[in-house]
Image (cartoon, rainbow, N blue to C red):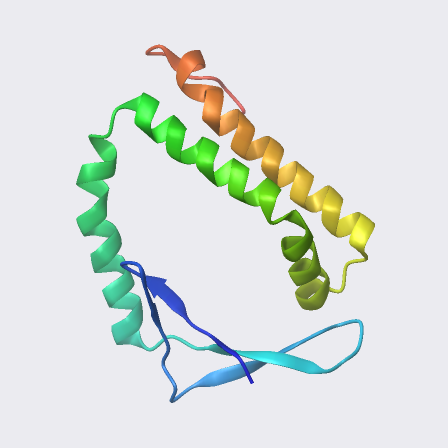
Length: 126
């Protein structure tokens, strides 16, 4: 059975000592397992995020937007697989999963263009 781990610093980590079944709500069958993170794994993820933040913070807005545009393209290119995963893990029918994904893509689209909106100000309730 597939074990879903934790992506830290570009590497997949699994704490094999503790895992939990992931059930498809539509069928009731366990389709995979998810590794439950140990305290050490959580601390490693926090440390990695803290180490990566200064470089990301200093990345020009245009380059950040390019990353988000690439993310949006990947979501669109993998829409069928993502919708299938949403169905398997949340029990959503394909139409609902597609709507949920589309809303996520719209949020990413907004993030892609937000740099042009901010110009030293902020938008309330966004």
